Image 1 (tube, rainbow, N blue to C red):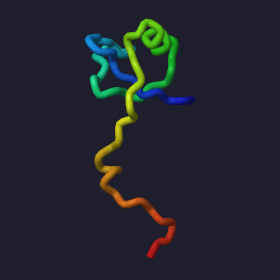
Image 2 (tube, rainbow, N blue to C red):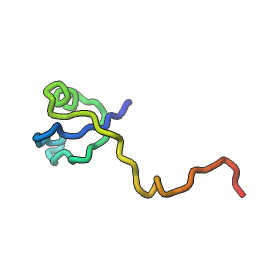
Image 3 (cartoon, rainbow, N blue to C red):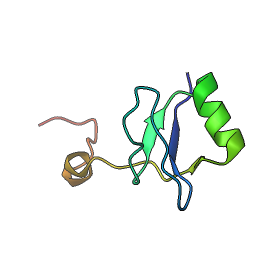
Image 4 (tube, helix red, strand yellow):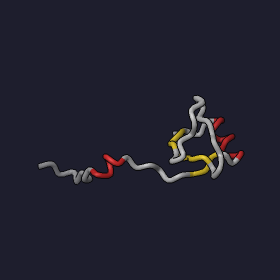
Length: 66
């Protein structure tokens, strides 16, 4: 299923489905009925996907192993 990266709209506090607060930096989730309602209500907005800092530091594989 397609994942969406979403964050709370400016000035809003949004609970995740498990009741934990939604991270201000965004969270990648599947578009469940709950998520679609939060989008429709304007509670959540699209966010840039977060990059794992460790993955960003690793060199890309070229397919040629020495």
